[in-house]
Length: 208
Image (cartoon, rainbow, N blue to C red):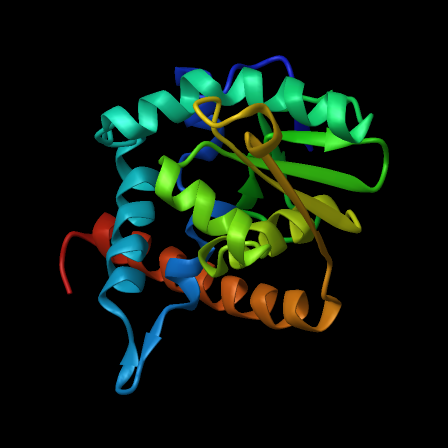
């Protein structure tokens, strides 16, 4: 299911995501340590379980850098459209076609095969990305999760900083889907969602 007529960040958008694993948090689902699962995975499991029980998403802190990224996104999108000659079709949320409780909020769809993921980082991070000419590792999982949910073939990573000279403001790198990786990731997400369901049952019973 693709939701378009809703603004990202709105209350309606939050309700679409309530209790669901989202692409930006799949890294927490996959996080493991040498002795087992990580604290971030356990915390995320409780977070989603409580969302399902209470119907409430606790508000998150928006830093000055994060707010700047939100404000800059329209300029970044326009710059990408001009350079790539791609039209960005904005969407609010996309449910995975077969995994209930899993979805994503990509920054846009491109034609029938592509997605775009836009970041507006601080200047040092933007320049480091340009110099490395690589997508930062921390976004690989998120972008693959988006490809999983949409069934699309590629995802363009965009880094944008309007404070740079014109030629250095925009960085674009394409990530192609890896079906083997996606299948392994989906298997872990299904296991995680089963654990969320079990946790919800415990909470509803009110005792261990």
